[in-house]
Image (cartoon, rainbow, N blue to C red):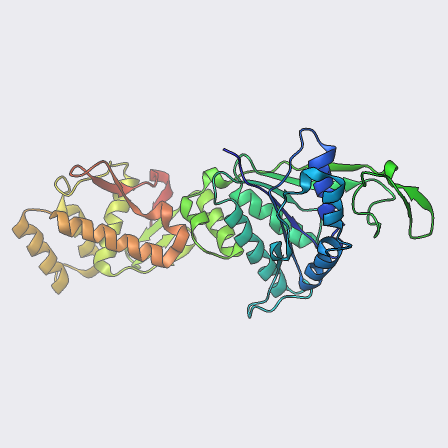
Amino acid sequence: MHQKRILLAVTGLSPQIVTETLYALCVAQSPAWVPDAIHLITSQDGAERARLSLLDPVAGQFHAFCRDYPQALGIAFTPAHIHAIADRNGNPLADIRTPEDNAQAADTIHALVREFTAEPASELHVSIAGGRKTMGFYLGYCLSLAARPQDRLSHVLVSEPFESLPDFYYPPAVPRLLHTRDGRPIHTADARVMLAEIPFVRLRPLLPAAVLAMRQSFSEAVAATQVHLEKPALRVDLARRQLTCGRSAVALPPQLLAWYAWFARRAHCRQAPVRHTDADPGEFLSLYAQLVGIDAVDYERTAEMLAEEGGFSKEFFEQKCAKINRLLKNALGLMATPYLIASTGRRPLTRYGLRLQADEVVWE
């Protein structure tokens, strides 16, 4: 099946990098890589410049490129493919200058890269040749988080004196004469446009699906990725009624804290996941008593109920696990994954336990 090829680039006030990159991909390299669509990320000023210099019906250099190199005629590239970065109120940014502007740029880039890599059959080629340095960094970093094996990252290189020359957009099919800024004549037949492919680390296979599936800011995605790649660390301090997952404290009511501490101790002692029929209620109750005391009303009710039923009921057991997992997800978001009480095996033989290793659980 034909893959949908997308060229994604950041641009600033030099829209030439679009046609230069297109030339390198479609003409200069073999085999050619012809995108089905081009998308640009830029500021308001950059978007206006790209529309006028590339897409003007008469003088647009993208249309000139298509006339010179017919293999590009089917590429979808319209003003709708130019994505202007906006502020939090939806107003396009004239430039990217403040920390807030940079954060908005990062979120815009992250959202688009995630969108373009969501379709398994797509193929994304990312160019970081244009725009401000921070935009190029964000684009490369976002690709590192989301890239599949088929996705690529590059920077276009143009030989002197054609680099940054306002009148040079690509080597035309019929070479012509241009002039440098100081009036020196140069010929486009001497121009060399090359694509430098940039190796990068693809983190996508290492991350839980939720990191890419959920709508989140760039900073949230980076934080969730960092936590996922770090070695988990669970700290349980019953004396202070404190539970710490990684760098975050999580508040649980006493009964649920005792329940979770029971699973944490089992992981710390290298005990296997357990079914409700095999679990010893006394292990849980001893931890619960440490928290509230044996005279506490809720402790007495819980102990009596478990004694009357002769152990844990399936409903009681699974409800406690599910409630704790919900609280962990609410408190930690995507960072909760390593700390959840996980189920293994098929019903009715499902067992529950933490996936943490013994050295990842600390008792204080």
